[in-house]
Image (cartoon, rainbow, N blue to C red; front, top):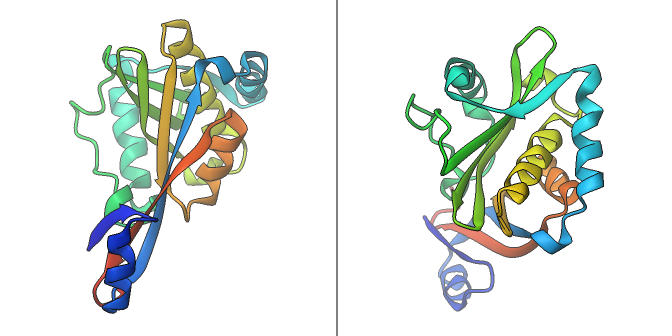
Length: 192
C-alpha cells in the first residue's frame, strides 16, 4: 500500500497500472484567530446533563486504557489512519501530550481526545467515544474543551485529521471550526 496526497502525480500513474484507492483521509486546521470561544464553551456546557468535561490526568490512566480497549476496532480507514492501542505510557497525559475527556455523573469516562503539543502548535492524535454514547456531542465537547484549554495556554495552530470515511469526526471537526485543507489517498495494487 502507498499513502500520498490525493492530487499527487504518482497517484494517476499507479491507478493507470491498476492500483486502486482503498481509503481516503484528510487533514484540517483551526487557527487561534478563527476560534469562536463562546460557541466552543456552549458545546462543552451542553454535556452538563450527562456529566462533566475536564482535562485528563495521571489518575485517569486506567479509565483511558479501558475506553481505548473498548473502542480499538472502531477506527475506520487504513494504514494512514490506524490507531495503535495505547500502552500505559501513551495513555498518560503530559505537558506535550494533553488529553481531555467526558465523564458520566457515575464517573465513567465515555469520550476522550489526545493532543500532541509542540510550542504553539497542537495536533490531535485521536478522539473516540464509547459506542453507547455516540451521537450526543460528547466527542465534540472533548475536542472543544481541548481547543479552549490549549488556546488559553498559547497554542495558535490546531491540526487534526483522520479517515474521510468517518462521518462523525468530519462533522465534529466542522462544528468545532476546523477547515479541511488536505486530502490523502491510500492505494493498493490489488484493490485490497
